Image 1 (cartoon, rainbow, N blue to C red):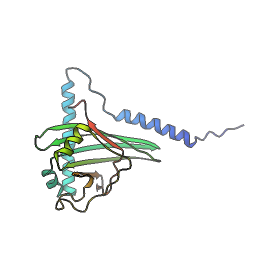
Image 2 (cartoon, one colour):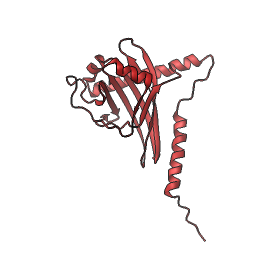
Image 3 (cartoon, rainbow, N blue to C red):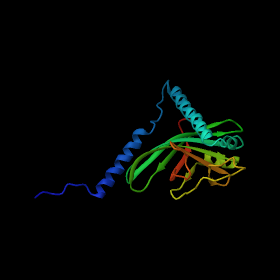
Image 4 (cartoon, rainbow, N blue to C red):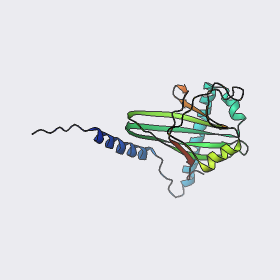
Amino acid sequence: MCRNTKPGIGMLRQFGTVFAILLLAAVASPPFASGADDAKKKEAARADIQKMEKETLARLYKAQPKAKDAIANAAGYAVFSNFGMKIFVAGGGSGKGVAVDKATKKKTYMKMIEAQAGWGMGVKKFRLVWVFENRKGLDSFINSGWELGAQTSAAAQASGQGAALAGAMSIAPGIWLYQLTDDGLALELTAKGTKYYKDGDLN
């Protein structure tokens, strides 16, 4: 008797979960090994993040020139780059970034991790620029971390602070977020279920 060997939905979901976990493990940066060149590796990693920061800000200012004034007048800002992949029902993303204290010029290197839910398949990349109007919000983001729940929703504001924050999304009082995709500024937040925290290797 010939049996039906076509995989069921449950098997596909299990395969998707395992594949996504293996993928994220593969793309995640390995911990820095101790040794004579450890400092060089860390410095190279910091340089890569700083390069991403400059490129992202340049893209933002081109898409929304008024963002430059918003960041210039802010207590600080943070820039992140994300890579994510979704296979069937499982998926997630990881990324790195840097938070900058405008008063002290201190850079704090950070990580982000994102969990995705729901059926689908695809790859997404985006850049995020956080703007903190006051030090309290900046310090909380850096020292306590931040988590955007999966149910968090936000849309780009038409204006703010004399239109300086046009195109940014209001995440909390005094905290704004620009999301950049390959198509330009996103009008609605898609970076949900995301957690931000200090990078224990680079600081």
